[in-house]
Image 1 (cartoon, rainbow, N blue to C red):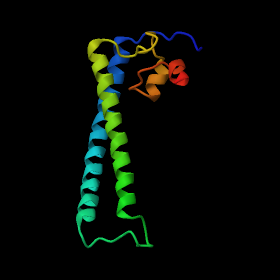
Image 2: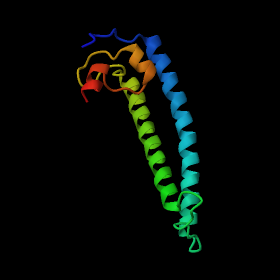
Image 3: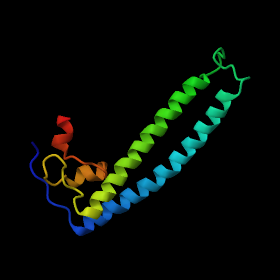
Length: 125
């Protein structure tokens, strides 16, 4: 174990809230872009003339759909994690490991501002 970290100050929490809000804004924009791409792939797949399964020049529409849907899903999960972290800021529990109830290290939060677990608990999972 790495030992207990120091609790966050109000200035620390404000710093991480700013990081989370900027990350959320960036993710929202990327989710919108990926949604537009998914819509374009969906339209191409529903077009009865699109027979790309035999196109040797690139990925099929099915491959493109799988890739884009996966990216969209990951981005949506990241947004949910950020929203959960912002909720923890609101209720005063941000920066506390959900498993052990101890402070999460500042270094970990700098790397992953939406972290729910301290580094030791994260490693155990």
